Image 1 (cartoon, rainbow, N blue to C red):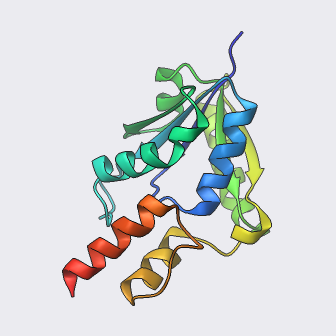
Image 2: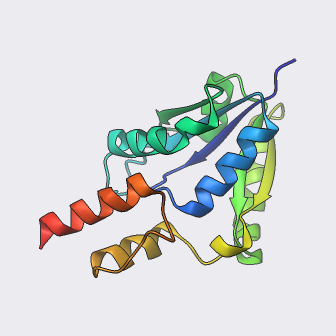
Amino acid sequence: MSRVAVFPGSFDPMTNAHLDVAQRAAALFDHLVIGVLNNSRKTPLFSVEQRVAQIQQTVAPFGPHVEVKAFDGLTVDFARRSGAGFIVRGLRAVSDFEAELQMAHTNRKLQPAVDTVFLMSALEYGYVSSSLAKEVAQFGGDVTPMVPAAVATALHEHFSARS
């Protein structure tokens, strides 16, 4: 039986902490679907199409068993449509755990056949968040230690065009 997992998130933008979790999940599962949430309640910096393209470029070296898809709605429904038995969630610090645990319990209640797997991001990325990367980029700071190269370029282009 194939082990399929989804790694969902808004990824606005993808950070090196996300990338670290995705790379380790790709090694653990036979098939990994990185799900880019199209959340109508938020106004993202990048469109869902731009985020999918950035992530596809970034994870291409992981192999053909890793794919990137946009989705909306419940993560457990996306997992079911993807044939996944697992949801991968990254944790940077203990402070992430409480909200993630609540979400994992809710998902388990909604879809008992889908388990949540937590992976800690690498220590060097414990401080990195999408919000922080956007803020640093907005004020002209160097985001290359925080985000993949394709994302750093996109952030630079976005904020250069606005000034």
